Image 1 (cartoon, rainbow, N blue to C red):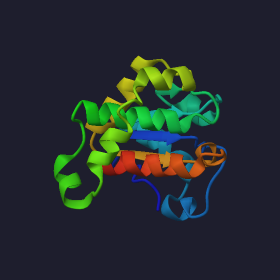
Image 2 (tube, rainbow, N blue to C red):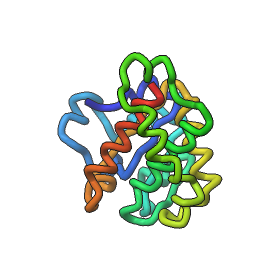
Image 3 (cartoon, one colour):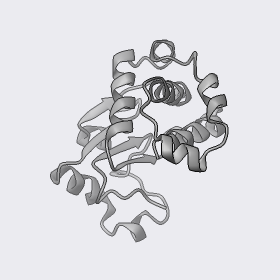
Image 4 (cartoon, rainbow, N blue to C red):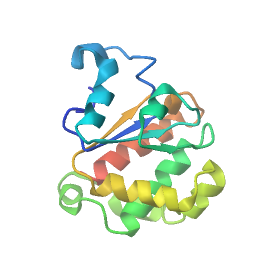
Length: 169
């Protein structure tokens, strides 16, 4: 499954550089997939790139979250922390579909943007702003890539990305 780029008002490219590389199915979901981000940007969608490296996708993005390599999990946990602490989560969706939300709230209690900043190198105010923007922009999409997947904490980071998506409905 590919994100719905054509309808998203916010597109986060997390460790993904689709202007230079593709994953199977991307071309089937979006013919001329290298043009989809430029098309989204032209219609007014905001593009954020989360990547340690200045890629062609980063150059197209409005904002660049330049984190230290392999620190994605800390950034994700801090974003979840902000969304929960500021009640930006989708309570109706969570009450219907999610189990263990109270345990999640407790788990990320200490994962503040300040904590994550010391690990990721991303300023805490930038982490907070990204979490708020993702939680309040409808519809929003995250496209993960190999930059997220190629680290020792890949399972936990992928789970945290899924949790981020779920708690915002």
